[in-house]
Length: 201
Image (tube, rainbow, N blue to C red; front, side):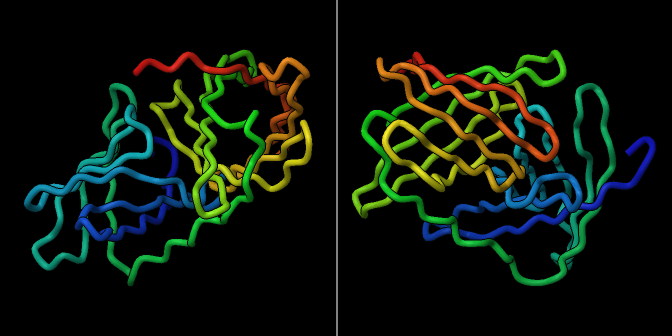
């Protein structure tokens, strides 16, 4: 970076359809296991967790290193990576079923030091007796963070966004059209309210 060196780890795997995916970790940066999207063509590797901050690099002939540029706005920052071993990706924590009133996609706006950040929270029950969730930060290049429901009783819910070291504790109102509560990330706390999102097909 212009004023410092930033260390990160990238773990990549292939799924049953031979598609490549993985997660990125930034030690000391409140990023641990954020999903990345990956595209590989010949020796060119492109990956990102934010669409507006992509990495693009060349795989070395021996397959042991990648070097290229990281795009931040109008700037290109050089990066280099070396393979250190097999991928280490934690199995996602399972969440218990959530109340039907919490299912769906919710929209909220978080005020971070005067900057408004739009969020989309999608939660769904699964057939196996669990639930899944994704928090999307619209104004951070569509950054997606897995959601774990750590507690849900009656109208109250506690959500954990472990990949970015954050959580949300909220309460569903009587009209079932608002979940209001507190968002916490490290020392930062702020009020956050979600309403049903208008999602286009």
